[in-house]
Image 1 (cartoon, rainbow, N blue to C red):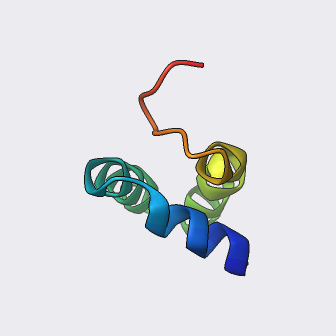
Image 2: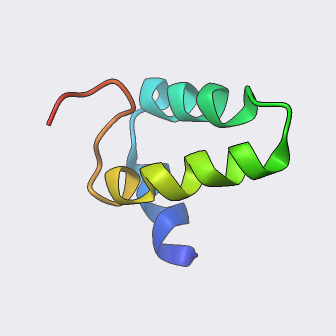
Length: 53
C-alpha cells in the first residue's frame, strides 16, 4: 500500500522504531500480519503505537 508506506515515513523515527519492534517480535508470520492489519489505521492517522487517542 503506497499510502501506508508514505504515512509510515512521515512518523517520527521513535514511532517508526516502536512499530517495527512490535511488528517483528512474534515468531509466527500470521501474528505479524494481524498486528500490521490492526494498526494500519493508526499509522495512516499519524498516531504512534503508545500514543493515546
